[in-house]
Image (cartoon, rainbow, N blue to C red; front, side, top):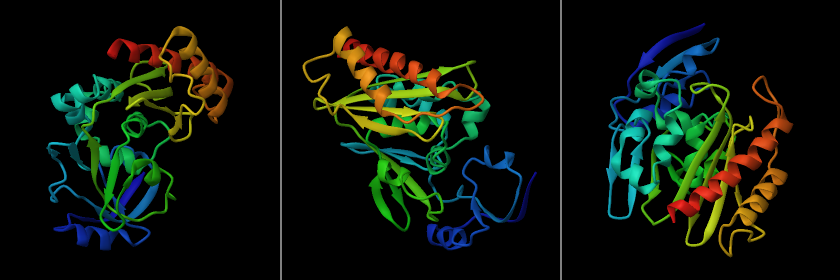
Length: 264
C-alpha cells in the first residue's frame, strides 16, 4: 500500500527541485507504477502545473516535455514520420489506452525500468535529456547514473536528422511486460542496436565489427544478430530464462536489420 503524507503542486522547477532533495519525497510522474509500491512517501511532488506536457518543434529537433503522455507520443504525426512508425510500435503494447493516457515519458525514462519499451527506443534515437540541475546530457549517460540521483527531468530532445529505425519486442501476451525489446537505428551509415527487458535496463551496442557496413543482407543480418546476442548480458525471471532471451535476441535483431532494408 502506498501512503502519502503531503501532496504538493510546485509553482516552479526550482521549488520542485528543492522539494525532491529530501530522500523521502518523490516526483509523481504519471503515478502508475509508483502506486503499486508498498512504501510511505513524505511529500508527493506533482509537476502538472509546470507546462511540461507539450511536444515542441524547431527546424532541427523535437522537444518533448517530461509530462507528455505515452498516448501523445503514440499519436504524434511528426514523431511517427521521423521514426517510420517505431514510436507507435514502441508504446502501443503498454497495457491499454487509458494507461497510456496517464503514463508519462519522463516517468518512463527517469525510472530506467528494465521492462521499458520507451527507454529502448529513445536510446536508439540518440535522444538527449535535460535535467533541471545537471543540464542537458545524452540519454545513454543519464541511464548510467545511479538511481539515487535527485533531479528533475524536464525535457527529452530528439534530432530531426534523417535516420532509419525499427522497433520490435517479444511478449508472452500482447499487453504484458516484454520478454525482450530491440531497437535498431541507422544514421549516416552508423548503426546502433539497443536491447532492453534483459530483464535489466536497456543497453546500446554499436556495430563494432562493421558487419552491416557493406549493406544488409540475410547473411550480414544474421552475423550481426549473432554478434549482439553474444555481447549482451541477459538474465532470467518469471517470463523467460537467459538462454531463451538469447535466442529471441538473435531473431529480433536479424528481423530488425532486414526491416531496415525495406525502409531504405
